[in-house]
Every structure is written in C-alpha cells, then in structure tokens.
Image (cartoon, rainbow, N blue to C red; front, top):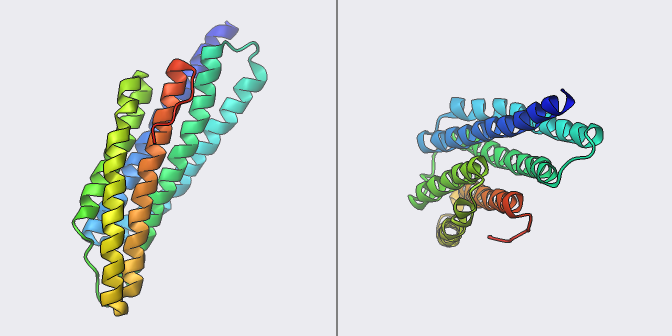
Length: 219
C-alpha cells in the first residue's frame, strides 16, 4: 500500500511538471504575442500570472524534498527522476521570468510617444525559442534522448540570430540615439529569448541524465 502511494506520488510529480511546462509555454507565447501586437493588457496578464508559475515551482520543490525525506530506500531510477523534476522545474521558472521580462518591456514601450518596430529576425528567434521549450518537454515526456540532442542545432541558430540582432540594434542606437530606451528594450527581449533557448537545452541535458544516468553538455 505504501509503495502504491509512493508510485502515485512519483507519477503526480511528472504530470505536474508537464503542467507547469504548459503554463510557461503559454506565458512565453502570450508575451511574444503582446510584443507583436503591442497589447499592454495581454502583457499585464502575463505579469499577473507569473506568481502562479513561481507557486508551481515551489510546490514541486517541496514535494520532491518531502519524498526524499520520507521514502527510503529510493531506487536509483526514481532518485534520478526526482532530482530531474527539481532541476527542470527550476529551468522552467526562469523561462517564466523571461516571459515576464518581455511583458514588462512591452508595457514600458507602449507608454512612449513612438513605438520602435522589432526587427523581423526577432520573430524567427521567438519561434525557435518556443519550439525548443516545447521539444525539451516532449523529450522529458517520452524520455527521448534523440529529441534532447536535437536541441543543439536549433540553439546554434538562436545564437546566430542573437549576434545579428545585437549588431543591428547597436547600429540603430548609434544612428538614432533619441530612441535608445526603445532599443535597449529590444536588446533585453533578444537576451530573454536567447536565455530561454539556453534553459531549454539545460532541460534536454537533464532528460539525457534521466535516461542514461550520465551528464552531458549539449549547449
């Protein structure tokens, strides 16, 4: 009976992590939609929902600690799962923070007298970052190391776009100093997207560890 309850707790951790992942994906999608449409209300909703992501992270951490403290002995595969859930939840919480950062930049931008349209490469970068978050969670769900390894190529493309966008925006700042604040906002959006992609590769590394019991760097 105790082991059945333990098995249910393990399954619940997995399911709630995926639920948290869905919340984070939606936050990132909504923040980027707010940027695309300059929708301050949508951006405000992203910020308002950020505490729910934080609460989900804290809940998962507390439950994993409780499991480690009360269920002994824990077999190696379950121990890997528990520590992986904790690590991935932390990565997701940070991606949620990046979504909130983008939303805050949108809210700041729309208060200015003139908007600065984001370069089109930001859309490509955003699409890839969201795809990477989705792929990393799919890799966890399936325990698929091939999916996890596939994140590397996409991350390299995100890094290329980041370099190009930074170069373009810095040149814009030099040519149009009157719009420096708006350009800084866009640089912060680029940074948030690049970091979200990096966090997705971190999740991929945790999936590889879960499946193989060895740590591997794919970023």
